[in-house]
Image 1: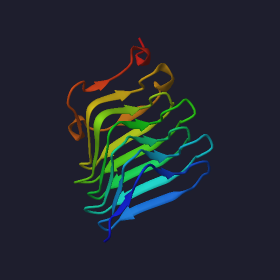
Image 2: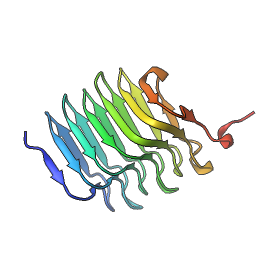
Image 3: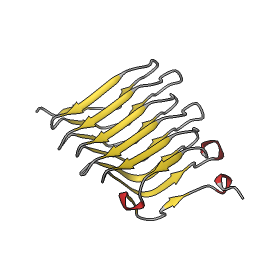
Image 4: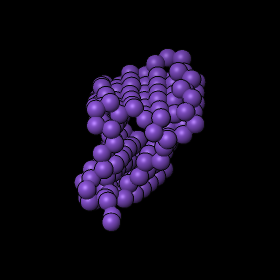
Length: 175
């Protein structure tokens, strides 16, 4: 397979819905900028799916799954790999109900810097299962009070947050 290298950002779902990007069979996508999934308001229900050994999406910038859009999905499965700087799952207040799934042995999402599930957006979910792994220096669930309904569903052995572990905002605790 021939690798695809893009200078700048990669956007799946700029303003519209139901855009699908599938990377499989040893595909390699690299880009020097940011990866966007559901970039603007109204960019809803878009999907990026990586499946298969040695299938990779490597970016020099951040990955924002649900920048402003809602109900977008990132699936990393069957020994595929995603690598980026900061990771945002539900970046702005309009970015709700976005889902990232990391599933299967060898499947890996590495965030070189911080990983946010529900930075500002509500109802976003990170699901890690079947020996999939998420690695980051720090991980945050519901970073600001507007993102507190975001969740992570995973056995702790499948996460590797080196510095801060998982940090929950005080506003998310109930007594």
